[in-house]
Amino acid sequence: MALYSEKVMDHFLHPRNVGVIEDADGVGEVGNAKCGDIMKIYLKIDNDIITDVKFETFGCGSAIASSSMATEMIKGKPVSEALELTNKAVAEALDGLPAHKMHCSVLAEEAIKNALEDYQSKQKK
Ligand code: FES
Image 1 (tube, protein in one colour):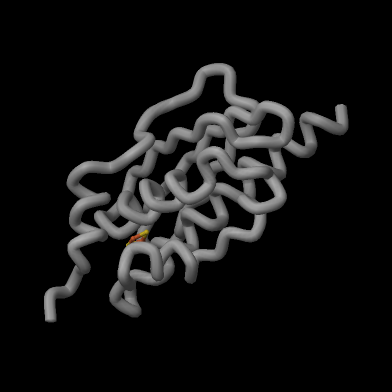
Image 2 (tube, protein in one colour):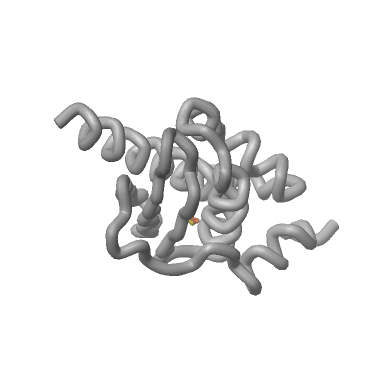
């Protein structure tokens, strides 16, 4: 069996939503101390709906594929739904990740949660 699914390879080679949102409503950044990979997520939120999302990932192919898939999964969704996105759902949407690469999808879940928390804390101010 190939190490990576076709979907992982597709999202790694042609990542969706790469970039920066200058006037983002929420920004989240996480890193994995072990591998040194870093992921940053930018959200544009209007009326509680994620209208745009971009990411920058300095990391491995699985981290790039996970960010790409995760951003696709929350685009157009309400904040409450995005908060429930799990790394498992991201990995499943990619048709699986090798066990030692599951932590790459955790980065995507955490970066999105951080960005949503950043948005929520700005709302309170
Ligand atoms: Fe660490 Fe992929 S090897 S995020």
